Length: 260
Image (cartoon, rainbow, N blue to C red; front, side, top):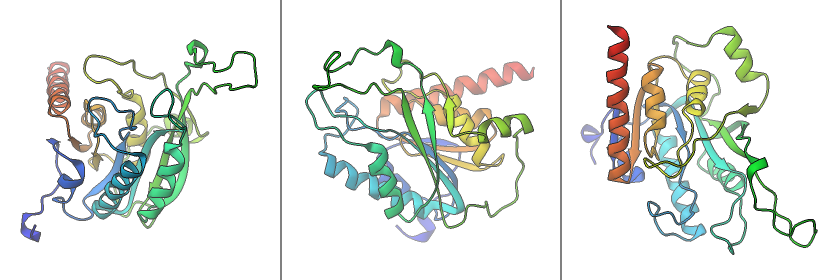
C-alpha cells in the first residue's frame, strides 16, 4: 500500500480483520484506543486458535496500534485477570499476558484500573465445596491496563470536559465500581457504556480520535458520539458491525430529538 493510499481515521465502523484494516491507517493518527479483545473462549464469533496463536495475533495487533498511535497517545486494554478456555482447560491470565505483550509492542506502562463488577455473591462456581481439595476463586473484577506511547503527557492542546468533582472521583483510587452488562441478543459479551465513557473523558480531549479494534456492538463508538470524540471501530463480524452502525444511527436520531 502506497503512502497516497493510506487513509485518515474518521467516524466510521469498518467491517474486517482489524490487523489488516489498521495497516491502511496513517501513522500517528489515533489519540486513544479503548478495547476489550476476544477472550479465546471459542465463541461462535471468535477465530479458532490455540493460546499461542492467539497471543501472536494480539501482539501483531498491539504493534499496529502502536504505529498508528500519536506520541503521548494512550491505550486502555480491558481483560480478565484469569480464565480458562473451557471446563477442563488450563487456567491462564489474559491480564498478565497482555501486560507483557503491550511492553513488547513498545508501549509504556502507566497504571492498572480495577473494574469491580460486583456480582460474585450470585456466582455458583465453588469448586470443592468447603474443602481445600480444589476450591475455585470466583472473580468479580477485570483489569483495564493503561499504557502510553513515548510520553505520558498529551502532545497537543485540547479542551477537556472533565468537571473537578468527576476528575477527583476518577483519579482518587484504582477501583472503578461499574455494573456489567448482561448478555443480550446484540452481543454475547458487551461491556457497559460507562467503562469507555470514563476512559474517554479521563484520557482524551474533546474532538480526539478514539479507536476500538474489536468494537463488537459498538459501545465505545456510541460513547465517543455522546462525548464529542471522533471514533473508528473495527469488527470482523458483519452482523455485529451492522448492529454497531444501527446503534450509532439511533443515537444520532435521539440527539436530534433532544436538540429540537
